[in-house]
Length: 214
Image 1: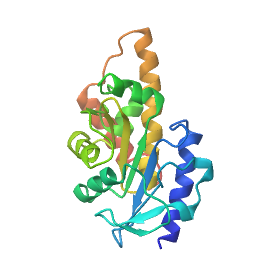
Image 2: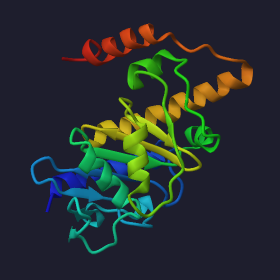
Image 3: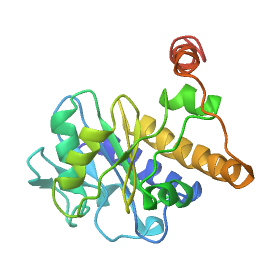
């Protein structure tokens, strides 16, 4: 079931350690199939180098396992909450990437002081409240806090990113850590100035409507 989606999801999981976004078995990606509404997600506690496409667990939006021999991620309920409340989202990523999570530990959003942030995120990366792992609470905080951004930090926890597909959500996770590292370095030197909102809007519009191949 969802063989192509599981294959893509397996390959995308390899991008997380490759980009230094996860350690050991932490973090996960899920993808929703727009046709069936079913969700494929990483199995719980399996090391990235041991993952295979057939290990990805298929669940419905209520969390019932439809196919898969392994237990799904402990974050599954939160991923499903996001999908139920954001019909535009078909990919969700969770990481504890180092620099971004440092901001989360301080309950601080990442200020928009880089054109790369304006391009990719359309503003600062917000930080939501603390929530316990295992139920829908994290998903609720993500939905309530993320706004129009593809990324949000969770206080004392880490990073969640979303996208119209899993690839876009992974890209947002990679970019979140990249800009978090640069902003952290800038803060060691001084106090970087935020880009004015009107300029952020212009940069974001150019990036989303003009940049790249059409």
